[in-house]
Image: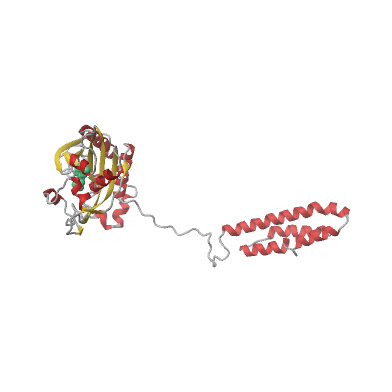
Length: 345
Ligand code: DAH
């Protein structure tokens, strides 16, 4: 056994390189395999005399450990570069950047509203977009042939029978589904897409989005409704925001109101956004009509509640002064990218 043989192999370890897992394995076999160079030295070691064993034992073991470490290092190196059969592709190259989209203004506003009401303890409920007449109208106190049905031009999916299918014209239908499903007390908001048979223009579209709110418990009053809307408006439009309520009519609430917020652009002085009034309409609301509670099996003598509904496109319009509803649905990248940083006005 010669010291030079051991030193030569030890020195050559430094130079070893492998591009693939297969090459690293070949090196292992050449050095440590059954007929490998280092294995051969160990075989020889068994035959040498005691004095020589003392001399070579330690260096041989060190050589073996060094070789094992080197081979592990080579294998790890090729693994991090990808599998051996990468087909000539360098998998360590940086990837092509994927152009990221931005969030749609309606999604941004919906998330803000959901976050605000979550803080007030509301859950989120959802319902089908293809609904039946019962959940969109009948259970919400729109009797058949009632003129209030004309307030919402409906797309029918299947007409002609008693409870036709239609595209929901408002998310108030989710109120009904929630009351049917959940025990009182109920505190939910229902964001969703709605459909109306309207001619498309800057101010009207056949698809838009609403968020409905519903709160039912014992002893809920109009004062609770007013406070909930005021807190929401201040979270949404700023702490100085004022609200005002105007009497209105909806079949499913009594009394009903429409809510305006103080114009956050001119701060009440009057501008072209608020048409000189200092106020901007944001939602409809009211105390849930006892007929609506009873239709869904809730005892209207024991429980009362309030509901409200708002259009997301309208709120986004007020926040960012979008002047044409059609922008929301045309997917023009120049418009969509405006909201990357989502500056608010
Ligand atoms: N569903 C109404 C609409 O689409 C909005 C609305 C008004 C919802 C008053 C309510 C409410 O819950 O109380 O025009």
